[in-house]
Length: 165
Length: 416
Image (cartoon, rainbow over all chains, first blue to last red; front, side, top):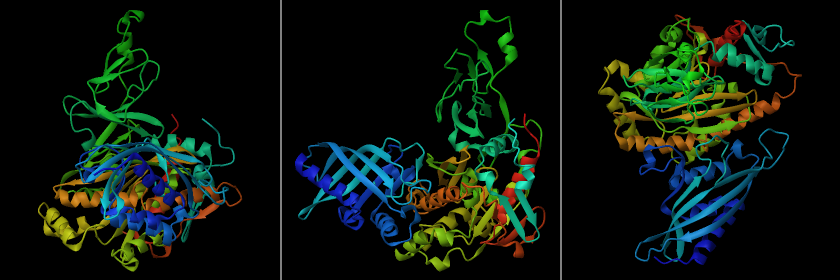
């Protein structure tokens, strides 16, 4: 599969924009049917028998979004505002493979909007890490087979992580 | 010792009558009270410090805290487990600076005092600066009394007082049943999730065995699960009970379903347990329990939660997912991601609990409202044999057990 850096960047920017505009239902559609959204805690060859902050298949992603978008999910009431910045994009050449690996740096600045007199609201927080995507071509579109976001603070205490990174 | 002149006695912070039970809001907000809790509670009772699966081999160690005291839990060459103060006898530095690892001993990075895995002083650098045998007379890392029950390692900073099993009393049989959810002994701990919140440590303490809040706070998670083919909300949390014991222990108990598993997978799991136990023990093991072990640990069916107080309004939680032994890996590989979805740092259940704790702390910042109420279900509470009390699953029986023990320990002047 061939993929230019520009094409990869366009795709990643579109995802970042969907997340920042909180179009979480649209974000779900970016994944393949067997796609995985993964925030690992340790690098391992068997993520299902080790700890992860999350390891979401399609159903778990859909449930997570359903709770945020359509339910009284107090941890997102009020909601988070985010700015996703994506850079240092590198596409691994893989002409023969069905998927292409794209690595990048992602920095997400987040704050909870609303009444800042409540503890926990209104604090600027930064979530930074290295992201690895496995992208696949499906019909006429690119789709995410794996989004693995390795946070630099993955094994340090994190406060309420209740939005989509 | 700090004086707390606005409180006559810590026992007055908890009041109980026939059908009323109240707790002073200052125990959540006052840093001077927090400092006393670290001395009078954490340094006076048994505290969980680790699990045998974290230190399986000689030379393995992990670090933990008892109150604000850093400790090392190590396994020596002969296989014995030692719980040591992580504090060099020379100038007080932490001699072990990692969460876990494997070493031949511990050497202080400041002046090079070296200790064996059992804490004994192996030697000091430049010994000629001391009289002969001077350093040997000071001794090794301070060793704490410790004991192991079903893989769980506990330690106490008191040299006297009851042993671990006497301390557990009536709750021990439930911990035993919990451990048998790993068909073969004992559970393996995966790496912990670390999360924090800007609130008092006791909010998380009260929460794990609180069956009442789940229907309100977690309605969004339960409704979501139901919308995706899980059990309907109405089937949850309606069958069960709360139990309270002496020494602050409590249980929230429900009919056993292992979440995330299909009926067939639940049957597979039960069959794995049945291979190791007589038939009459299967239902008691299978029952779902959240067991709070005072002062700062909750056992879930596949999670160990350790609550680490940082300051009156700051808490860190280490949350260890559990992998059952003797269970087909196909089941563990379903249960772990499911657990992460509910209870990790980003869990659909957990994040809403944390939101309640900061909202607790927000509400209690002032001083006008002096008392909160923990009286729910006192009108139906029954005393069983020993120290055990029981009531319905929305009752605050476990929370009352916590504060009876809190008041007992805080009223003993155990200040060193």
